[in-house]
Length: 195
Image (cartoon, rainbow, N blue to C red):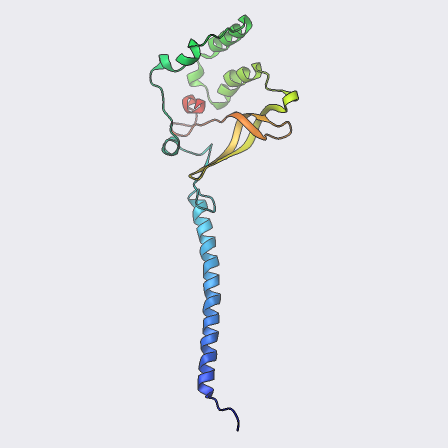
């Protein structure tokens, strides 16, 4: 006696299995498309793959920066450097002369300077006056170096104009950096550039 079976039932089970397999393939395809669309959306919104907002130093606006970083402007101009000036610091005569000459030369025009004027006439002479090359300590300055700062809430990245860092061939551990910041008013306004 042979095994009896219902041809329609087997055919129906086979179609259900085939449909199930097709729907799994479609689901996998849709999940991949969804992940790709999420990546694209994050990129358009300025976020990394995990959805953390990413900001470029050169493109962030003042309002965005103030919403994620606590920046307090000291309105009382006399107190801006009060703690520094109250310390007992003796500058060499030649240092005072250099600084006074730099200030005298630029003070009347600095508010009119464009980006390169500010760099060439004020910032670079000041930075060049300081010896940032410390070969024995593997420390030096770098110009136009890529830098990234990551937190759980945001990522800053961009190209820093000037970095004082550990490392001789490549900046490894920055101690401080100068990055032009100018979004907020007009691109040539020196006040945000000095921020």
